[in-house]
Image (cartoon, rainbow, N blue to C red; front, side):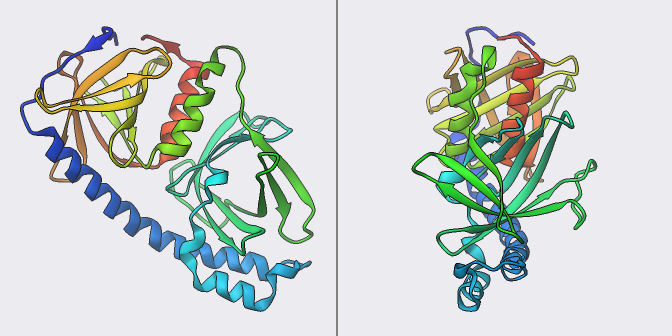
Length: 303
């Protein structure tokens, strides 16, 4: 797949209206789905607090009941967003939609999942549920920690939920070599992105599109079966006169312009003219970050 420095594809419909519809629908759907899931996981978090063999002072009955009642406090704190790395080389990623991305060094595999938090303001019970190979979830593939954000030293500290022993200290992920160019990109994606869509192009390539709430920061990744890829992560702009959206990559400074249509089944069609189109459906933010990290580490960049 080859792209010019700026590929302009004109789109006949009013893309601004379509974008607004897309964001409104996605936000409503995500809130509905995640609220149901977070109520369950928040209960597990509260249970983790009270079931510890060694119960910390802050996990007294009144505090735990308050945390359990307020399931919506499961939203991750801003301090935890983004990619982190422990001393063993394992990667942890936490995102605004409560999705999780892990890269386990010893097992040489990536994992995706979801997580929930229940906090008293000092420690937080963290439940991470990893997806099975087929994308389903069950109680067997779950882990619970207590997590504390050490904002002074910019660290995350994971504690055993029973003994309160420090299990791992996470520091911000910093890649080296060619991947180091993407350190800020990974962090920006964690801090800014709020929605993600994933699917396939007409040629069978994987296409992942993500954006913030108003579309001013976006990411696109297209990768084929041979791991050849193009990526654009950076400022998103809307050209009302021509009816197009342009993403300018913050690393390469190249740009991609494309159209977006909202389909009746709530999927999106992304039209790139002569380069083809892709139909994508709602995915988690962790998918966007995992996809780019995989491509940068293993693929051949084509743009």
